[in-house]
Structures are given as C-alpha cells and as structure tokens.
Length: 178
Image (cartoon, rainbow, N blue to C red; front, top):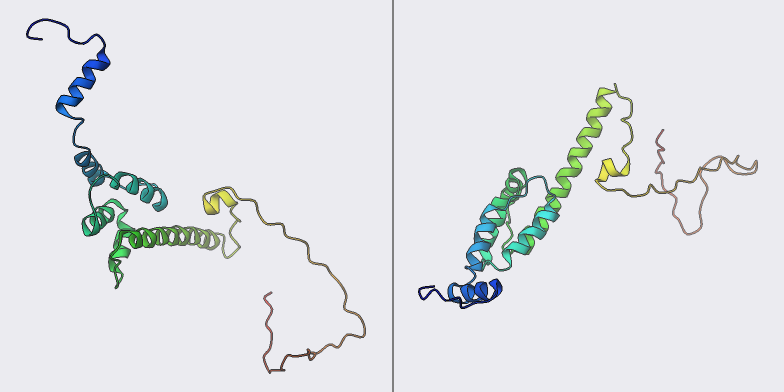
C-alpha cells in the first residue's frame, strides 16, 4: 500500500494473506467465552448437553473447570438438586447423565402435579387424559387396547380358589381395583 501498487488481484488472495499474517484469532479463547455464556434456558437437558459438548470440544477445559462451567450453565433448580447430592460425580460424563435424569424426573413430576391439580379442580373427577404430545412432548401412537371379552363362567367351574399344579396354596387374598 505504501508504494500504491496493487499486489492482489482477488479479494480472496488479500484475505488469505491477512489470515496468514495475523492468524484467524484464538479459537480457544472464543470457545472459552462461549462456554461462559452458554445457558440451558428453555431447552431440555439433552439439548443443552449436546450444545455444551460441541462448544467444550475446542476449549481446552477438562476436569473440574469443565464441570464448573457446565453447572453454571444449567437451570438453577436442577443445579441445586445436583449440588445437594451427597456423592457428587467427579467426571463430566457422570454429571451429564445425572443432569439428564434429573431433568426428565423434574419434567415428569411437573406433568404429574398438573394432572393432579386438574383432578382436584374437577372435584375429584378424573382429569382429562392428555394426548401423547401434551404428556410427553412428542407424538407417539397410543397402544391398541383390545376390549375385554365378557364370558360367563361355565356352570361346572368351582366358585372358590382352585389348586394349581406346582403352586403352593397360601392364605393370601387377591384384591381387585374397582
């Protein structure tokens, strides 16, 4: 530029020379900054873990520092429950597994609370049944339920308990739900 001569004919050549001269930036620093900013937010723990793994890959973080970044990125309620565990995991993979399991349990308990709250609001009547997408966050087919056959017992069948071959008789009684 000082000689006012054009050394490059294409912009790509110019950019390649700049990258060669100044480097492409410190990729590790970029990954570390991303790790410090990542948050679970409204994502499932599975989604958060996958994203976290992708970012952590080039960060240079290992062991305890990586676990610390993971803990501070997850939602507070799950982090609190993981921190209250007596035997805390020492590997990041165990933290991932426990966090995913806790997230699933937490979401399942919330669905159950909502179902029970709906039952209470209907004065004890059963709450309306949720479809698969509402209940599990995804669309799955309901299993086929075959109608129960209504057969009248044969006249010769005994009315009391019968002995079955190879089974000991006990005094246990069977309670059937109504």
